[in-house]
Image 1 (cartoon, rainbow, N blue to C red):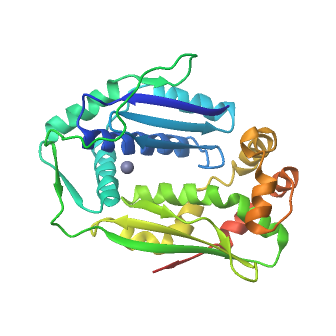
Image 2 (image 1 turned 120 degrees about the vertical axis):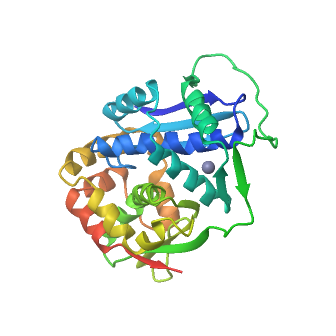
Amino acid sequence: MGKQYYYKKTVSYDYEIAHIYEHLLLHCLRKRLVERGFTLGLCGWVHGTLFTDLILLETHSFSQLVEDEVASFLDRPLKIEDEDWSLALATVSAEYGYALKVIDKLTAKTELEQIDLAPLQRLDGSRVLERFTIRQNKTDKQIIHRLSDTVPPERKNIIFSFQSDNLNELAVVFRLWPIIVDNLQYLINQYGGYCDKITFPEFNDDGSTLEMTLRVSHTSTSPLATEIPNLISTARKKINFLKLREELNQYANYYQSSPYFAHDPENILDDSGILVSRQAIATLFTPENVQHVWGRLRATIS
Ligand SMILES: [Zn+2]
């Protein structure tokens, strides 16, 4: 249980393909967790960063079950389906703000498979490993072409808000916020969109409304264009409420004991003015409260 880092060297591969691979790997890992009935953010989270010559993967598992699931997923090669690959390509395009076109599909697929087979190593051990070049413009092999003269992806701000006068609800929603964001982000990626900015949740002046903005980009053909208004209800439908009690219990145990959350009372007080212990938050994390919060979340698009 806890945090793990993994890395994969991509020095001999095309940079853009490595970028697509990084998006693909993260998406497939999240998809696997969701398929196994886990709720993203509540079971843990995964994050990836592409450097010039390597991919760094960070995983945080809140239970042994999740850690085992993540480890077994990362231990085997990905089955690279065309659908997942084009989705990863769309999200990279949305991230860049211009379209990417695959010039040589066969070479691109082969390169993706080679990157997949390159060892993904756990970052542990007691010695310094090696030094990488971290800032450098890499020239790629022209497998991918950057179409900067095409219609740029559309960019929208989605403002999520929650209004209440009940202190318990506000404490729950404040702690639940990163979990909500994780699920929304996964959904946005599934529709081929990319979140390039997430603001920190803030209360309005009278302290009754919590608000946060996600800035998303998507190509004009992406299904996200029509799905944005339904994001909350779709994300809520995907939560496995039958399994939620068990998952919330595991989360509550981890939340109260992990040093990762040790500064939460201070952080929550600092950002929201709410004085609450980790134990009290854990007690408030019931399926009923969580469902209630999801049901009262609102989104406006600008
Ligand atoms: Zn990226």
